[in-house]
Image (cartoon, rainbow, N blue to C red; front, top):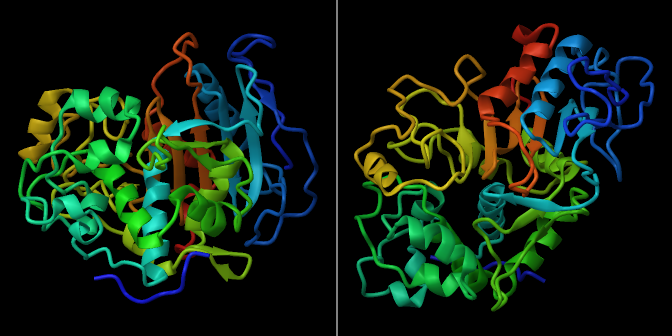
Length: 409
């Protein structure tokens, strides 16, 4: 049940990519170079802008990193950024992307939604083991009555899923909350794992009731502003509800801040912005027993059963009706077997926020590295697939990748 709580009131890497010709669609515009001098201290936080450091000073082989950047450019990226130990190793932009212009990042939104639930719980406004029906009255005295907030965060709610509802209908709905809350219950909570946009959108109904106000405003006050995400916003549907499943618009630089916040265990310049316990619960272990690759709306690199949402885990590309059946029986939708990982060979404590079009925010606590790759929301821009395994390969550019420190969290 909800508890009484307070009211809501270096240098950049300038690379010449031999395989890319200047002025081509794939040629990146690198950030302005700034010499870093001596190797920087181990822990730092950005101010209004990221402090920059040479890749060599941050433990990267510059030529190897150049290859990773080239790969990002050839796969249709709009931007690519690498941060290590709180310093920007480099950022690159393609297709005329403005570094300060927010772009849709689709299901990266879900990891922000999870964080907002964690903040509301820390404020005593809800408990994730509460029944969601305490906040969604239309679920009371129905088969959905026992669905918990944790079930919604874990994608084990058993709420109705079909492709036409979960993608075009939800995206185009004037009132996404009304559509999400009004669906039926397909399965008993906790018995199936299904990547369910509508079930996740129902968290907006929960949070609006718990907060007594707009969820996007809460995000601005408690998350985006404290860490300097000035170019990030949550969007609304026509009726003013926050699109909490796919409505985030952000930039490479801002998402790097979000990732670094989680790398630092929720701390930011001496302030515990997100409770450390929540960071660990959301990203430190699987949230359920059906999909070892999933925390609380974050993707994990834990070995075991790996379930995706549409053929290549974890992309956010629209699934088929058959994918739900596969997930319901515990079969990996990408054909993976037990023992698989999202990025085989990469650290098991690595985690990601992922969105449609292979938008990727990657956090590796051991090497204290954050990687962001975004792609244009433009079907006319050519490119390729950028799975999380390619982002994980950025660690191969570290001179001593085996020398990962213990997690700083």
